[in-house]
Length: 225
View 1: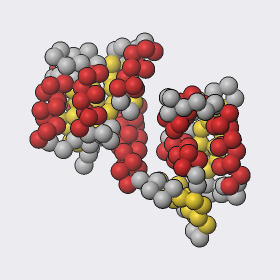
View 2 (view 1 turned 180 degrees about the horizontal axis):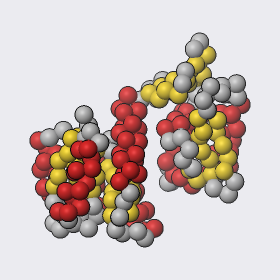
View 3 (view 1 turned 45 degrees about the vertical axis):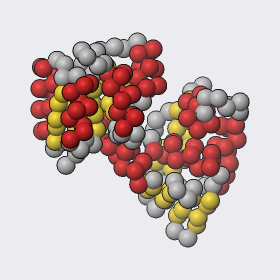
View 4 (view 1 turned 60 degrees about the horizontal axis):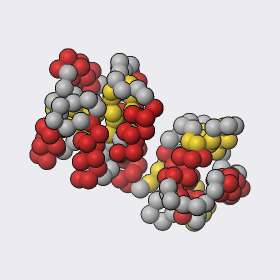
C-alpha cells in the first residue's frame, strides 16, 4: 500500500482529500504546513507528497525545495488555487512533478497520483517496459527479444522521456532544456535529427511510435499489438 502525505492548512480540504485517497486504497498522513511535513517525513516513509502552495510558516515552494534536497526522486504533486502561468512555472522550477488547480476533480487527482507513482517506480528501477520492448537506462539499451540497440546517450534519454509519458506532448524547448540543459548552445534542429534517427532505427517495432504534433512538439503513442 502506498503512503501519501497531504500538506494542507485548510482542515476541510485536508479531511476530504484523506477520505478520498483512503477509499482508493492509499495510506495517508497529513501536515498543516511545510515545517510539520518535514518533521513527519524524517520518521515516516512517504511514497508521494501532495502539497498546497499558500501555507503559513513554510509555503509549498520552499517545502518542495527542501524535499528535493533530501528526497531527490520523491514524487510531488502541487494542488493550489494559484493558476497563473508564472506560478505553475515556478512550481516546476523548484521541483514539483505535477500541478493541479483547485477545485480539483477527485478522479483526475487519483489518476495523476497513480501516474506519478508509476513513473517513480520506473525512475528507481531505471527500466521501462513497453510490451516486449525493454529500455534500460543504466546500459542505454533498448531491446526486444534478441534485438538490442545501444543508443547514444541523448538519443536514449529522448526516447526514455517520451515513452515514460505516453500521449503527453513535449515542446522542443522542454526537451532541449531537460536533455541538453539550459546552458546548451545546441539549436532545436537537433531534436528533429534525433527523432528521425530513432524512427529509422526502430521503424519495424510496432509497440510504439513517435508522433510530430505540428506547431507544438512530439509525443509517444503506444500501440496495442
